[in-house]
Image (cartoon, rainbow, N blue to C red; front, side):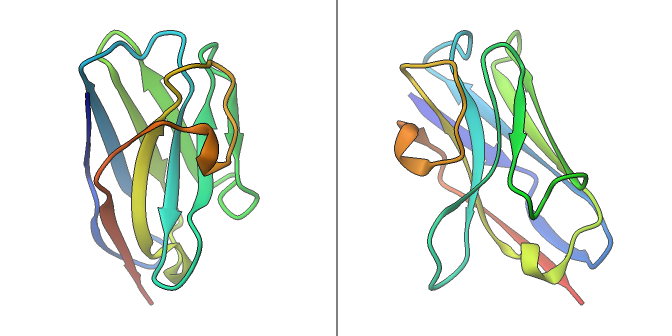
Length: 123
């Protein structure tokens, strides 16, 4: 099984980026998926997740700015990020819960992880 992220990069404050996660080796159906981020010296934090029935949950810090979506047919999920701020600078990870469809913003609830993609927002 493998999760492959794409879409990170450097953007100016106020700009937008779209992250994608392609899942290989199993189907996304019936599984919750999420995006997390971790900055140097900080704990990994949940950013957004979407349940198997497409209910979405967001960290307070990104509500109204980020949108998570899933494409079960394409076995992919995405994170659209807008109005980016320097404090959004981090390594972003996609993750799947192999055993459940209800999403949570806690890392321990996820079993499979991508390698991470860097997002840098300049001021």
